[in-house]
Amino acid sequence: MISQKLEKALNKQLNYELYSAYLYFSMKAYFAKSAWCGFRQWMCVQAHEEIEHAMGIYHYLIERCGTVELEPIEKPEHDWTDTLAVFEHAYNHEKSVTARINELFDIMEEEKDRAALSFLDWYLKEQVEEERNAKVILEKLRYISDDKTALMMLNDDLMKREIKKHDIK
Ligand code: OFO
Image 1 (cartoon, rainbow, N blue to C red):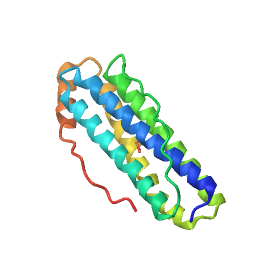
Image 2 (cartoon, rainbow, N blue to C red):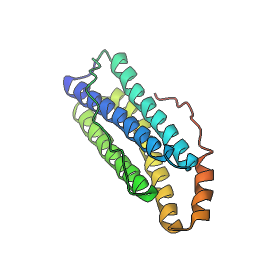
Image 3 (cartoon, rainbow, N blue to C red):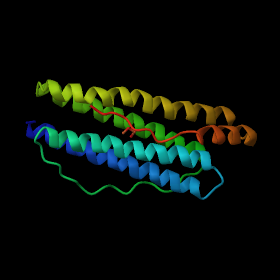
Image 4 (tube, rainbow, N blue to C red):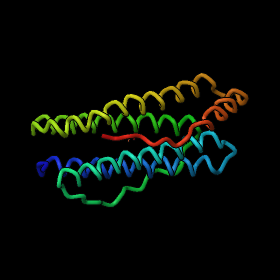
């Protein structure tokens, strides 16, 4: 059984992961209006990963005899000035997720809930990858600037990203 404080915090994170999926689906829709199918694909995979993150918490709450309380999901942005602005947003968003995961760690440590700490380890490692992935694309976009050929090559490269199933434990 988990404490009420941790249950509330995990439900909040569950909601934020679902918001993340909303945000990336919104970014996918932004790219759907253009010929950038690689950027669209990347956002699609990202959105599905966020649902996976949310469901990991959902199942963990149930496993620990906690209560899942689904709150309304905030409306995400739906328009950006350009591709660079989308990835700046994505990178900043991932940094905000990492900060929230760190806050969850603080609560788990306060509660001395070792099982929960071990569960959250996966999310901590995942955030390193999530931040890095967004940052690498952002840096490439900054470097590419107005070079349309290079932008098309990056778009083609992102097209290769596929949905993978992760084992969240
Ligand atoms: Fe769930 O990590 Fe991205 O937002």
